[in-house]
Image (tube, rainbow, N blue to C red; front, side, top):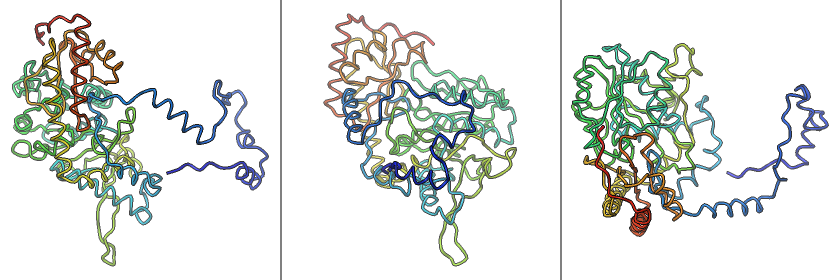
Length: 465
């Protein structure tokens, strides 16, 4: 939607209407020492054409690098229609739908989104989104502890294979609320969380266990076994999933004998661009029996007195709608614009289109791993089945390799050494459906040249965890 500023005549007319001589007169009650000083070094305003030209020139300096990084944010193709529709004024300027009679369009979009997410994840209920995937997991942990009436320990098992940023956010948001997070180690050979690793904590009476699928390394967890382990001990299973992966592997609602209890994650793969890190949106779904503990907004479909269908907010559990002490959350929100894009994206691609996209991502990642592991000194770290991403070990520090690749217009992946130092020189790579065979070949070629130039020795013996 274009931004139309006020002209000088508009400003003079408004000031005349309210009896003010200058805009500064509107702030005369603010003491002078508290007022902001003029910004130094900021040039005079330019017209639209000049600004567009400058921004285009600066964007060209960045080039168009081939992105092989994932780690929770993915470079997927987004049909042009998605954001052409999303940025129409009706959606772009829509506000919180407090008045149903004036917000039927917004409410219908959210209702369609909730329906699609519930079906995609095979869950009963979806809320109208949260800030992002990390805060969605924190909300899911809080919800699981509230909802589990059989186990009141406040202990939650959190595998180290969960995204490091997600784990950090969860600690920040639940650490002061009487919840104990117990980290579970991963299998150093397979890269997943073996059910045997949970047995040491069976006597701790955990209220919930978090199950990532796929996990941060791209490895597929034994979600069925982990879910059944939780339910056998009266714990709830909290799924953290890539929504695109749910189109080709079992969705959370089908895990184990009874399915996961809650499912959350990051919605960015569904039509939201990388945008230098956001804004994205988080999703949170649950089984019907826990719906009254679900934070955020829920939109329902009903009939009016004349039998016409309509949409309205229902089970409003936010502090804005009820007493703060009764609210299930004080931080949740509806990322309306991103959710609108996701809804349009899913509607355009449909079930078949999403499945084909996921399959292409898997194919490209397998091709990428095969080509990179053919480079002397590069090897795959984990033997477990994977989707979309893979961890590789390099003979030299990953940071040095990534800098050299960046000079060749290649975003080579994510350096794992900071979060998982026990893996040595480790790199997490990803190839979405956007990547071509030519780009994959170029990556392998440049990687081989970089390693040979640095005189890289063979990969060291795999360290023990």
